[in-house]
Length: 113
Length: 115
Image (cartoon, rainbow over all chains, first blue to last red; front, side):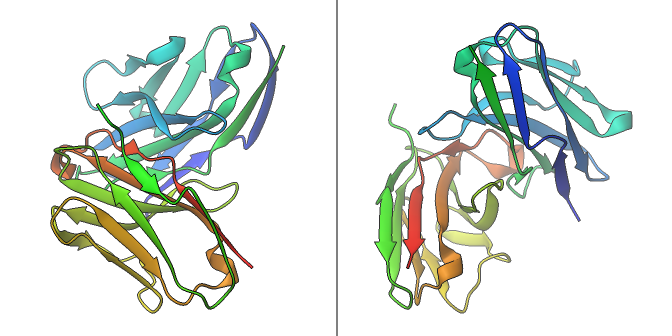
């Protein structure tokens, strides 16, 4: 069955710390990969996506993610977090392009000033 | 450009009562999704529409849940009767085409509390 595993449910960091959120997917074919973010009181919005080409993709607000096919991973990174990055982060993928998105359970990130 | 609009934002009902949620997708988006998000979990797909056709409703509990998208634009998700375990956020999303697996655009969700 298709699934997404996010390694940490809760992460607490101080401002300016570096961030890496783990994501692994379970699917045998070609995938499209996404990271969505949900700020407090707001709707889910796209941070970045990978469809093909360069496995290192850059998104909004200084976030980037690297697709490592051999590890079935798509980890999210940011070199220096800000208090405003406090949010829920969801990794998601679609396989084969026809079924909508399968989401992970999310990581709740808290940035302490 | 207007985003995905959902209503109501919040709904509190007693168990066994009916409830309905409405969604207006982004103009021109022919694919519409209803997702369920329980507390502390990621969104789970309930149903997906291509225009007015439900192309994937395998995860929709059909004994109490129903959905429609009569003219291929707005959609309604209904629960009748509601149970305590239905308390969750119901998310609507839209996209241009699922065949290209593009980005989904989400509404703010409808938070249901069943007492």
